[in-house]
Length: 401
Image (cartoon, rainbow, N blue to C red; front, side, top):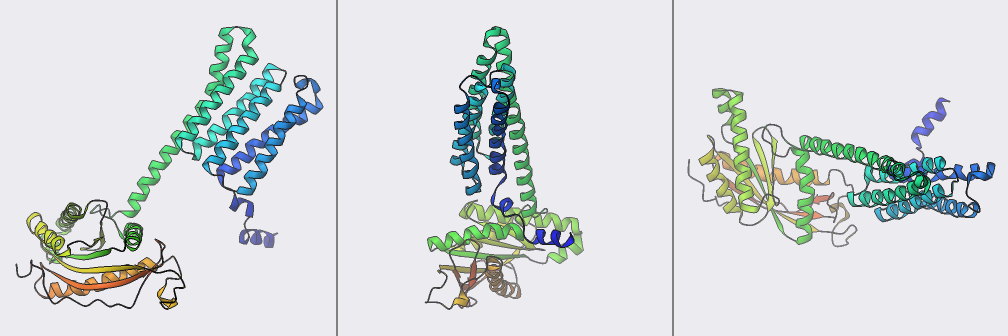
């Protein structure tokens, strides 16, 4: 028995891996009409006269739905909407074929299943349309089943049937929205540095994948800035770590404001990479102007100064197996490719940062251009052979201290 259990863990059920939750729910709900045929065969008076051929047609559609869903594995929104509406129509017809009004009302309750499934994972417009169709169907069936009992009983029956449909949709939709908000909040917490509110390394990797891929597709240069707070240890030693935290938060806010004012809030990445060091990744425009803007803003808004190492990134597209380049220049794995690119860029910019520090701080040095090849996927990239060289010219901010 233990051997079987271990084997089953190593080889998971292929059906479970192919079918998503929504498709599985469609299959399960569609098979719910099968017992009607068995009941009709055992009790001929259960259905209206001459209803059996119609029920067989409905069950044939049900079988097609189950087989199609099982083959596809993951239904698209259009496929789900078509099959869901067809399934509800089949349920409504089946309910109408039941001779006993109480049986009709019991089968009518099954019309709540498809809208509830839609509320769990489909777009709101699909959920709304299926819910509206379901309410129309339950209203018509309520009129058919209890219409002879008077308008008051019919109104109550319609209200109860509509409530049976709408309440699960509202509850599941509310739970889904709550779960989405919680997941978004957790994602922000996982990607954000709690002290400064900037991206941490995890958030940096996620955002940089998109930025680098876009630069590759558009054949545009990127600019990387490694920013380090000058004499930060002195701040901690003199005024305490609480003052140091406030200083880091102020520098982070100043960097974000300066960068977003220059290149736009959605076009640049500002991240805290550790300690008092920050990384800025943005489309390459006038790097000298942005560097001077950062240095000036930090001088005026913060109690400290910063030193900056800058780098130009030349991201070039490359197709896997391109004979013009050695195969080793193409990333063979999705994991780690971007890590290598960013680490290489940071190392080159760090070298320029050390030059700025050694020459008096509160200034910047440019490390030249680093060429990067990218395989066309936003998750894979690899550094090529071009090596950046430190620029011998200082920015205009040099010599201020």
